[in-house]
Length: 327
Image (cartoon, rainbow, N blue to C red; front, side, top):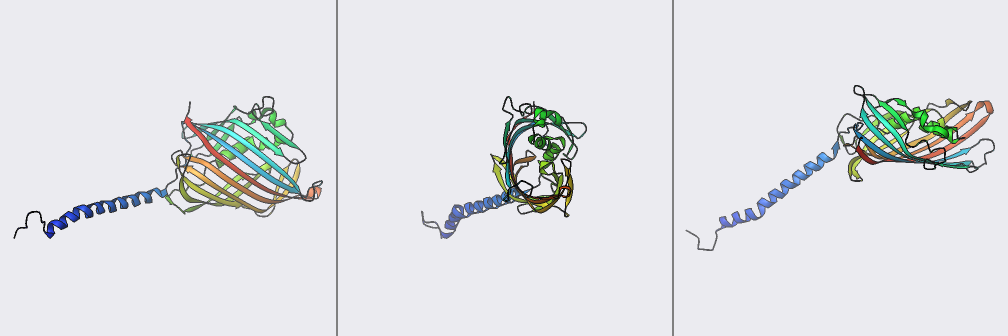
């Protein structure tokens, strides 16, 4: 029997409710499923570290070092505190080289140091027209990288120091920080060590082991630890994978070195390294690194019958300030 005009039957009513609620609800659930799928993809990454050929990367670095020396003749019972702050601004221009190698031209645009050892203080800056650092800024150093983006040679490191190399105390420190081997090590450490060849998700970790130079020209040390993919975040608008790095010095008791003509025995009583690294997969390099190093060292000079201790804390922040096409 037909329905009266204007009075829909139950079938028409159900069709109306389906169009009004069921279709939009289905669309909403489909959108949620897509969103969750995209989010899942965003929470995994395969790190792709490579030197950005054709680009000039500008970077700044601020290092604060605090040391406490004790036990040496003439040192007060409570020890002597030494602080050192160094600021660097540098540019790194990357180009192709022979075969699959790469060449990087490094220039220090700015360099300053403030050293305070209590009994004496020294401050130097490349901005001082009459200072010993004035010739460092702008001089090129050439680094050749192998097929694995590791530094294989450095040219021009000795020329950049100029008069600064002859400054008492500070000259020796600069030779260690800006010398050929130190530059090689610093540039290698700019890279994340042992990038895993696999897709990573938040919480995944992987081990590393590397050799780094010790401060004040005290040789090298082997550092062993692990990286962890902590989270995804932005640094100054750039998408980054945030990695944490922890580690410590691998030590088998005392290490013997020679410094300033004296045989020195060192033993690391405690050591710890921590860092947060904002890695930009698109750039192929870290955008920012915040690092903390803490060490407690026992030292002795058997020939002089001298035993000393050194506690050292060092913080370092390096970050990319600008990336532009090579000229």
